[in-house]
Image (cartoon, rainbow, N blue to C red):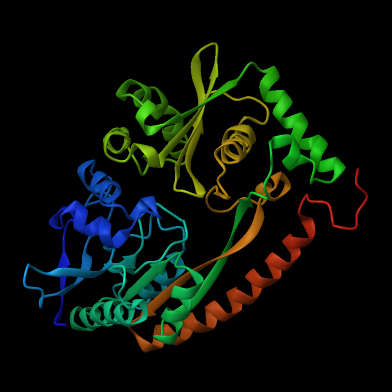
Length: 389
């Protein structure tokens, strides 16, 4: 085997079938269709500060052409937006020291805080060997061009262990995920709650229904351009109130509805036939990923119903085993989502900053562990030996 490495500036430099053979079907955000839609709609590029710089490992010994062995979806970043693993303080420290933190490198999917392998390995290949090779090529490039740092976002536990063995700094945080315990319907799910929490959830759902809001669950193939135009102001409003444009535009969703329709789930809340709330999600064979939500009208508990309860309804009906609704939000705990550890790994080129950041991450990690231990005492679920009411 004669392995060579090269960087590309667009996912479209690789044929879709070759890319997807390595990326697989498990995780929609690594699909060629998803990443090319980000590029075509200008959601990534100079404007957003996410510049594609993907690393490929290929075997040139094949008689019928290069065989694609591994991919590291990689971006040159000129800011820290849309990552959901926060390093703003690190960037300020570099600036105060008169050093350049940007551009940096990020291995992950733009605007997508969902767990998956960062290193994509072709079937039948040795993941540890090729993963180490991807990291070595990347860090060698960083040393040559004096790039401050590499950030591998939301890797799996196995990949995080590999990154640790390779010398990357370890970081962890917490999200709130829902898991399907073979529930027959939403009432069966609620039957596992303590009485007070069960009544609270029923009351929240009732308030939305009494306001006259009803819901549709639509796939990408159900979504027309007109429907995307109708809901765009809804999910955009969540960003606009924070004084920034949305990460994702309607052109991205329109293209993806044509190229990867089965990966899209759109929850639309309507009142008197007009759309008043939406949650735009993605899915694979066993997981629903909540990504974007918004509403232009305000009703009691509308957020909980649109973002959480409707998603749980969908998972139960479709037989999906997990629901990852995104980052942050202790309010998810009372609604049946439990704390889950997420990971990131970081290569810091300057040894002085690397040592300081390592100490910071050790202290931060202890705080996260204490926080998770506290949260686990406050889930809404009945204990096994509790009163059946």
